[in-house]
Amino acid sequence: MQQKQTLPNTTAVLVMGICSILFSCFFVGLVLGIIGLSMSGKGRRMYSANPELYEGYGALNAGRIMSIIGTILGGLYIVYWIIAVAILGGAGFSLLQILGK
View 1 (cartoon, rainbow, N blue to C red):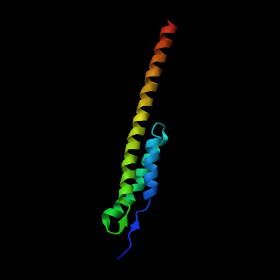
View 2 (cartoon, helix red, strand yellow; view 1 turned 135 degrees about the horizontal axis):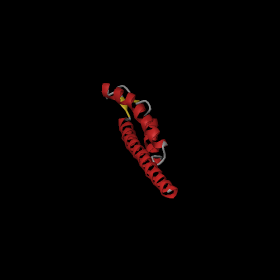
View 3 (cartoon, rainbow, N blue to C red; view 1 turned 90 degrees about the vertical axis):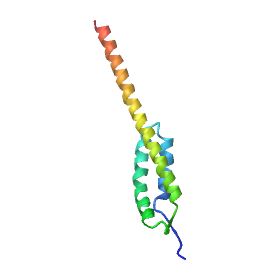
View 4 (cartoon, helix red, strand yellow; view 1 turned 180 degrees about the vertical axis):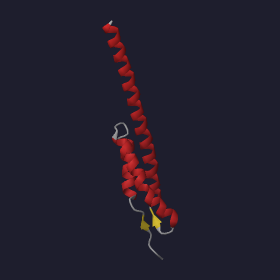
């Protein structure tokens, strides 16, 4: 009986997924989530080609799911800041118009 190998980057993808959720309130969460997603691709392809040869797919899949969540949260955070800056910029411009008259 052949011993199963651990999928490559399983631990790294899991760590990237966790960190992407933890740091999603900073811009770093989006970057870590994207890196975690790209690193999980090779392991998923290897596992789907020969699932009997590899172990650790659960951790890889959990890291991938957390990377997706962290990417979404990071993207929402960026959209929030774009909207906030637009509102504050519009309010500041309106205030300058009022004071200038």
